Amino acid sequence: MTSEGYASRSRGGIHELIDIETVRAIADTLAALNDTLTAGQGVSGPAARRVIRAAARAPRFEGSIINHTSARRLLANQDAVLYDNPQALLLCHYKREQALCHRAGIRDAPQLDRCVPGCGNIVRTDHHAMSLRERAATLDRASRPCTAAGR
Ligand code: SF4
Image 1: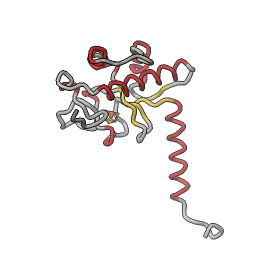
Image 2: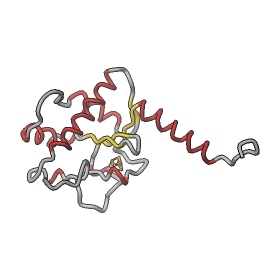
Image 3: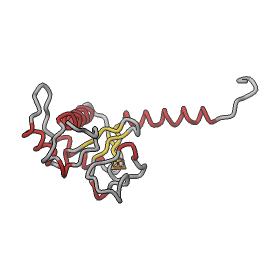
Image 4: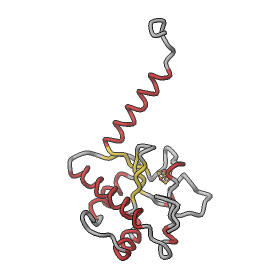
């Protein structure tokens, strides 16, 4: 199977080619988010409200085989399409009309490697938020000039 990889698949072309691994990744991301919310953690970001609803309604596939029928069903539900973006420390609850990563493009999937801060599709769990603060603190420390004692 020719594959461009996770999040690069056009859902418009899904009728031609379904990458089960992509569907599995989306389903796992949704299930993990549901577990996070069930455990009492919060989410934030412009898409937080809608992703909470989506996670509660999403089908779960643990221990079951995802076939083409179940894959099509999941991908047909726009609300259930959630991408993990660990590099940017966020989840992308993709809605094309709000996506800032490829407004001029024709693809109907996010470009996770071109994620734009401030996009309306961004959701962060409490864990993401904490990791983001740690990353900022690390960058802050690294940007400070060396002291005489540290030289
Ligand atoms: S900019 Fe980031 S959050 Fe927005 S659609 Fe693209 S990948 Fe998703």
